[in-house]
Image (cartoon, rainbow, N blue to C red; front, top):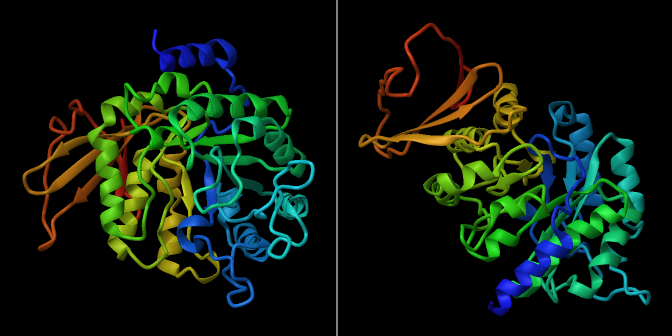
Length: 381
């Protein structure tokens, strides 16, 4: 037996079945800093947009006051660059004292007092992707305890500056450590994205025993090309990925970039529709303080959200790729309903597309059709 196989066997023996937090029975919804605000740490020159407690208080206010919370958007998630460059003398992670002068526990209370939940970022390597202190194997337990003591509700655990063996040991160990704190903390793993995202390198049956959700593929960028590339990867590999998803365990194609700079209105509708069909986390990364009404309408579309949050948790599939550059996607829903997305990849002109029940894999019969103001519609038998 090779060394890696032996390590995997030890992981199965020692930490198998570690995740038991009862969380995220539907895909998580909320807001994350990374895609829009990146690693802006210059709070002197850019106080409104830097990674600091004021930004997260502002976004908390917007989720709480602008109708987002009532729709299910409940997580405020800090990404990379929140930390001090040094751990405390007790070996604990600590926030940058200038940018987070009140500390994370007080920020967590601010978030909780408004009926929301706080997420935070860590990385299981020697350093985070942007060079801040990482969570090496010997620091996993103390970091899990620290996050729980601060009142954190969600951990995004990245994998920069680590190797395959460290990831194989570290991701399950963090799952066990979070459970041991006694605090319910949703656990987002980046593990698959660092090993190619597909079997045999990723055992999705095993992964769902450790993580509530996981990043499978590349980071999203603020462009339609990026959205298309991610969607293509997920649907090209749907046979490997679809069955991995379900209540408490979700594939994560990354953030919603609606309301930023790179998508047209139709492209923004398409991202929301595809993420709804995929049962993907609906984690926005935009500036909620300056969101235009069109972007808000897309992100607050109740039908698209209800499809995304369907309690069956079945990830949708691509049904058809037509020569006309029209694609059809389908998702099974509760109560004998289903959802369809018709996506045009044409770049020349509008196109009239016709189909049939048989071609869309429906039996002959009478169906009720609901058409929201987006690219999604649902079918009820």
